[in-house]
Length: 479
Ligand code: NAD
Image 1 (cartoon, rainbow, N blue to C red):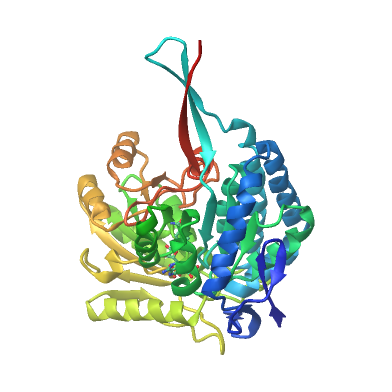
Image 2: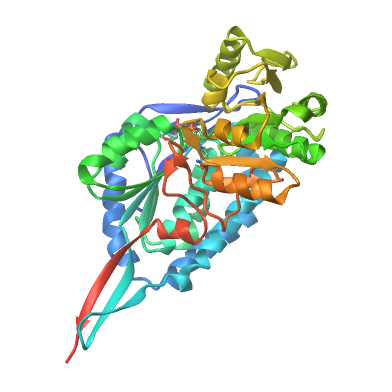
């Protein structure tokens, strides 16, 4: 069993608290590691050292900062199998998918390093003669990155890479549920020569360490990926200091399947986005609206496809489609929501229970629900599990209205071969992303941003990098 320490000011240090949290393998329920259940003092120390280190870090040429990101990418690639094994074990992510996450994370560091020579300001025309107005883009200061358990390694890069390249220093707090890969990364990059205090890793609960990091007056920006509840708590904690927040929160993605869609493509795309990582993905299809004239045909195809899903251990060599859910808390939540939907009249076409195939672990069956209604909890609230509820619609405008009738606004999709329909829907859907005739998954050069309760600000691409910059206008009068 491994024991991790926090990484503060360029050193692995013990927490001032002696409490620890156990990290479990969700397939076997074995204890994999213990991490410190850190203290408020640890959090404040990490912010302090990051604050002092930032004064020098921001004076580095952007390309010098970028060189460290390239080194991180190289180290990730050199250790890709070890990191993927760590990731797969701590969160029951299928090993193949874990490798994809590790590889994309390396690319993410390189991609952000590429922005170093493209962080540009503007020269604005002054109303005065002999004056230039220079709009500079400046780092904010200390960036706090708070991570979820579902894509902990990739999301770590989403915070670290853009904050460091733009001249901020960074404090990362991984989720207590899946911190191991991130803490292994802290060990791997120890030797790259990053100045002390530029990048720090502290562990602990959201209400304690997370709260202390976010309410510290030296914190410049808090970037959270997590639940709406945590986002609300962070907005409360940052309000007294008017600290900038960037929030990537939950989703309840609708998929609209029109009568003229390629139904096989729609079924494959929706099911694959639903079973990938057992449905524990913020952007994956959470509810499906099918045009009534093809509903029966779609139901038959989606039932067949979901029935063929192989559920196995994350390291199985049998080419599985899905593994366990991440934790007891997560499977309990999914079970409770499906049971509640049943009491509200939902019909279980497939699944609807924990899997009886395994003695240990948090395995839930791929589940298909019909006879659901728009006002039911299963249609309105994020399930974050392998559960697909289906509803019918008659007109596209009705489907768009049903899709928009939700507090979340992260991602959405439409399946149709009609150009006019997809263009109309992509304008009307109130979501930060709309996927047309494809699975739900964003690209690192896009901009992943939620509308409504799904978030504020966003990540990836140029706009994601600019989250970590503030503007300053210099009025330069000359004679
Ligand atoms: P969570 O909100 O329980 O925890 C996320 C992080 O926030 C953890 O590190 C936690 O310790 C911390 N936290 C909790 N309370 C806090 C507080 N008061 N102050 C500071 N930090 C606090 O979420 P989770 O269960 O780890 O992740 C699943 C959720 O994340 C889902 O809702 C999912 O949709 C969302 N998510 C969103 C995106 C996106 O890009 N929009 C991506 C991945 C996950």
